[in-house]
Image (cartoon, rainbow, N blue to C red):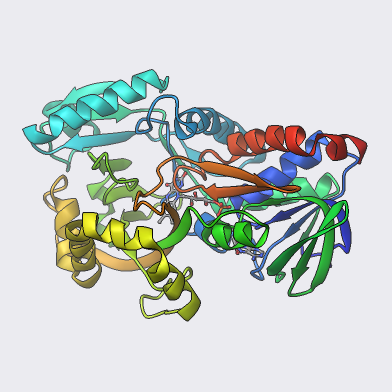
Length: 411
Ligand SMILES: Cc1cc2nc3c(=O)[nH]c(=O)nc-3n(C[C@H](O)[C@H](O)[C@H](O)COP(=O)(O)OP(=O)(O)OC[C@H]3O[C@@H](n4cnc5c(N)ncnc54)[C@H](O)[C@@H]3O)c2cc1C
């Protein structure tokens, strides 16, 4: 249900994706006397990354031990399973295999195993070629890593359940309300938006693909910039869904924040193949032809873009090939499911990753949070941020208590 945007509130949360809603709910539960409003630019909640992803509850295998991703993913996966159980949201702890297709990938598989164990991922197990076939009869590889704690859920449904709880706790949600400007107004912030203005004691920005723009509007520096990467999926034709029992992943390139083309069973029974990772010309380029002049200009004017392209152009060409040629895309997945043929797949949806890119050309791997006067900003929350959302919400609420302490207590 959409409310009128509040003219005044104690804390405004900008963004009605899974993070904004989880943060707003956490703040509302911790501060029952505070007035909390969510402002979302689209007519519907969860319209962007939250509603367009692989739907995987990651267990925490990949991430550098000690990083925010490692800590918040492991904690967040536990919280996500619990939340889904408590709220009757369909989910399944179906397990996943990461497959090395040749000896050259074994060193990287060792490193993933080391990371997973250091991160405390439960039940992680090394398997051989026979073990892969036992778990996934149509998959092939020389060795694998099995993570029984990995699962699937519908993150869009989680977001809507979070919105319900927020509203039950007294919070409000205004959709169709795009925040356009942020200005200091005495002891508060004035958020100007497409439905008027909201004066908020404090604000938390969880704006996904638009995070950098709002942070800069609130007085933060431009680094890192968000660059949109489109992730397109294919899906297996219903008659070929038996090629995949649960989740099959390749060994990823450790220097890229993307996990490679994988095969994932969804909670509705569909099996997705993807996603690609193609830099695009709009932050909402769900259709490849969508070009937004402002988005494109900001991507091209960013020195990091050119540094990244100089380093990763070969990967870029491969991704372009995957995007243009179904056969090339399918071939990437057929490395570990050899029976897969181009006629076994159909086109499916695409999602746009909000990926932070440093001025130095580095694709920022870890989650990034920052402050400006009276505001907190989520500046980089790519995968596994949906898995981690409840843990991120606790982390951000702790930060809010430190940064907004007096107001959070007195409201
Ligand atoms: C292809 C793909 C696959 C993925 N797979 C997985 C996975 O399997 N597991 C996993 O854990 N994670 C996965 N992720 C990552 C995950 O989806 C995101 O990390 C997560 O959804 C981020 O949530 P969010 O709320 O920050 O972003 P979003 O869902 O993008 O929400 C941001 C919201 O802010 C709103 N907004 C922006 N600007 C404004 C403004 N000016 N005013 C008001 N509102 C504004 C937007 O409309 C949007 O609703 C994947 C992502 C993609 C794209």
